[in-house]
Image 1 (cartoon, helix red, strand yellow):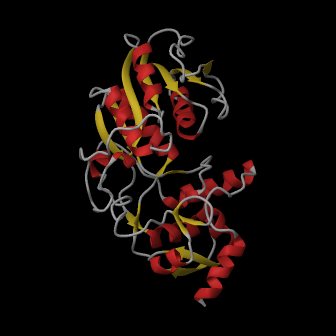
Image 2 (cartoon, helix red, strand yellow):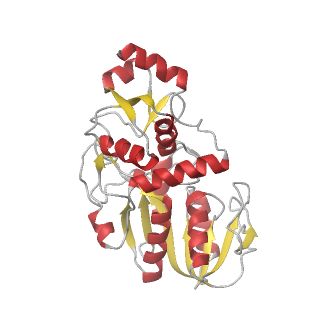
Image 3 (cartoon, rainbow, N blue to C red):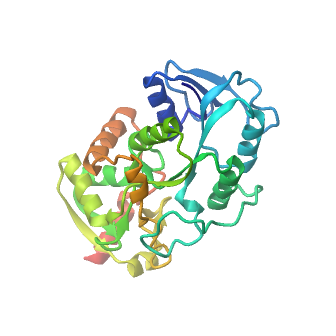
Length: 318
C-alpha cells in the first residue's frame, strides 16, 4: 500500500509511520518538520497546512491517509487538496469529543461537544468534533484515550513511571478503586493500521477497558521491579492544597475530580477490542517507558509534583 501520514514526526503519528514502513507500505510523511524527524527510510515532504495549497508538494495517489490534526482548517484543506487521490481515510480523534464525562461505562454515542470556534486553539474536544465532521462518514474515526509509552513527553503516565522508580513513600491521588484507562502508543498504531487496511469506518473508542488506579500503580511497580509505599490522598485534601488534576505543573497526573469526570476514563471499549485492538500489560509499557527515559535523557517536568512539593504534602498527611 501507498500510505500518507499527515504528520509522522511525533509520538503516535511517527509510530504509525514506522509500523507502516515495517509492514512494507510505501510511506510518505507530510509535515512542517518542527516537531521532530520522521522514521528512517520513509519519504518526507515538508508542507505547511496552515495555508491554502500547503499540500501541493505531496504528489501521487494514496491507498491510505492517516491524519492526526486538531485544527479543523488544516483537515478541511487536506480533504479538499487530496480529493480524488486518497483511498481510505483515517482520522485520529479523541474521547474528548464527548459532551458528557460524568457517566461511567458509556459506549460509543453521538453526544458530542459543540463544533469548534476555530480561532481558539485550546478548544480541543470541539475542534476534534469539527474535524470528524469534515472527514465524513466514510472515514475511520479513532477516538483515542490517554496514549502512553516510550516517547510520551506529556509526562502523564511517564510521571508515575519515573516516580515509582525512585521508590519510597509515593503520594497517590483519589482512591485505589477509581477507574483509569490508557493505551500503549504501539498498540494504538498497530490497530489503527489494521483497521485502515481492513477498510473499517465510523467511530471507535481506542483505549483499554477501565481498571483501577490501584492496579495501575501496582502494575507499574511490578514492571519496574520496585516496591513503594502508596499514601492515598483524597480529593478534598488535593483540592485544598491546590494540586491540579490530569496534567501540568503541580499536578497528580491521571487524577480527575469526581463526580463530573467519573466517565472520562471509564468508557466501555469492548466493541473496539472485539474489532482487534490488543492491549499489552501495563508492566511491559512501564518497563519500556523507563528504558526510554534513561536512554533519551528526557526530564519529567511537564506534569506532576516536584520532589519538594510531594514531600511537603506527605508530611501533612502524616
